[in-house]
Amino acid sequence: MGDSCLCRLSLLLLLQLPTWASTGQFRVIGPSEPIVAVLGGDAMLPCYVFPATNVRNMELRWFRTTLEESVFVYRNQRERKDEQMAEYAGRTSRKDEQMAEYAGRTSVDFLAHGEAAVNIHDIRVSDSGTYTCFFKTGSFFEEANLELKVAGVGSAPQVYIQGPEEDGVRVVCAASGWFPKPQVQWRDVSGKKILAFSEAHTQDAEELFSVEATLVVRDSSVGNVTCSILNPILGQERAAAIFIPEPFFPQASPWKPAFAVSLTVMGLLLFGAGCFLHREHSAKLQILQERKQKRLEKEEDKKTKEQALKEKDELQAELGQRKAAYLAAWRKAQLYADWRKEQFQARSVILDPGSAHASIDLSPGKTSLTWKDSSGSEIWSVLGLEGITSGRWYWEVRIRNGDHSEWTVGICREDVERTGWYIESLGKGFWVVRWGKHGYFTDGKCDTGFPVKQECCRVGVFLDYSEGDVSFYDMAEGSHIFSLPQASFSGTLFPYFSFKSGCGSLELPASLNNSSLEETLRPSGKGLISGSAVDDVAPGADFPLLSGSPEL
Image 1: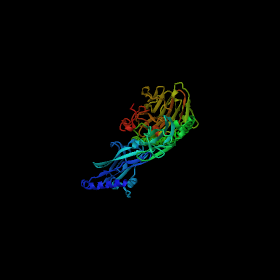
Image 2: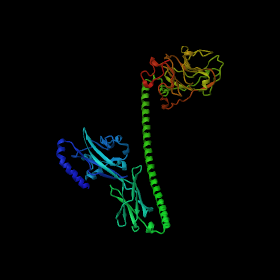
Image 3: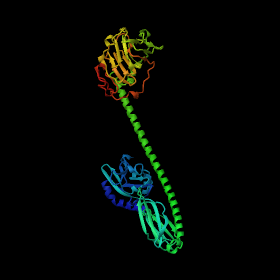
Image 4: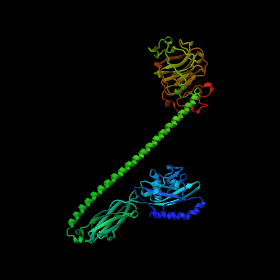
């Protein structure tokens, strides 16, 4: 049948050759006979153009009713899965080699000869129907229709005696899992057809047919009866026979009890066989469901990993952009303490015992101190041992139990007055920030306080001697606390620490380790405190990625 179909197609193409050659276009040709596919198997849908034209750069599409119901799309020399119907996802492929067998060719590059075919895997009942293959180049396109017939052979028929019926015996034949609707035929031992008493068909959720046919046998001499189930598309049938003993017929049997016992035994045997078959079928269905679930979970895991990688790449790109912008104008930026530290030299501060108030206890290494509640009549202070006359430096101060006391950190000139009760202000040579019960203060004035959410336990002091810049950062949060107005330094400056009330301890770490870069990447403005800008430019005015707090 395939050879005659190809001959008719070839003759038709030869007759149409003058018309197509004159127009310079092509026709799309598909099989003239329906394509038959078996449930669970594969089906190939071939099409080719005439005259033979290279279709590698064309748009090739197989669809059901409309172009949007695409089964397979080939464009720009690759498959376009994003335009495919969901029910065909993962079930289609382009099969040039199989299509070559259909066309009788031996060449490998079938697209160059205008030939293409799509293979549909794991055939379902819903795949049955009409398909259209569509070939397009530029604004010109042609298409051809194909018909796919799906068929499946189900279970073998089960034939059993149901019981007496009027003057005969009722025999039942049942089968399931067939498509399309199967044909049932009864025959006697000589092969003669017997008309069925009744026949009922039902379809399950997968659209497969089950059939139950009954036959009333009234001739006690008939002996065997055979029930055959035929698939009308495939022409395949399955049959089963049953022997009806003569004593089973009411008019001929004096032993009705024997009939009842035999019927019961047969019923039990059939029930056991049915349970076994049902259990086997359920086990197969469960295995298929587990495979499907694993495939879906694998696809979901793949999507999740791809999304995580995408988000990671986006975060790294954003981080790179922010750091590049920061490094381009780090003096004007008041964000990201860890990035700012890269522009400064870490300083290990050693406390000067000679400058310490008598009530301050220094550790043996002179890198930490403790203080007790003072009377409030004087300020207790201590200086760093080594002075600073140039460069960019930063050091970190860690305060314990500082929220119950009043303390000050920063720098001061060498000649400042530090006896009794004095004012820690810019005019007196102090560049400091002070913590008290109302929050942070600077310049020795109560009206220069600014709000913060909580007291900072790790304060970073940043000193740029040549630029006259002093800034304070919350190193635990990586956020800006305050920047003092630009000054003009001369002479030697010393790290400065003082206490007015409460009790607690202070530590100057010998080594300063940067925290992770992600900890500094916070939304603009979060955890920032008002401060002055450098060169009278508001922080972040020209750099939106480095936005800071407004000027105090």
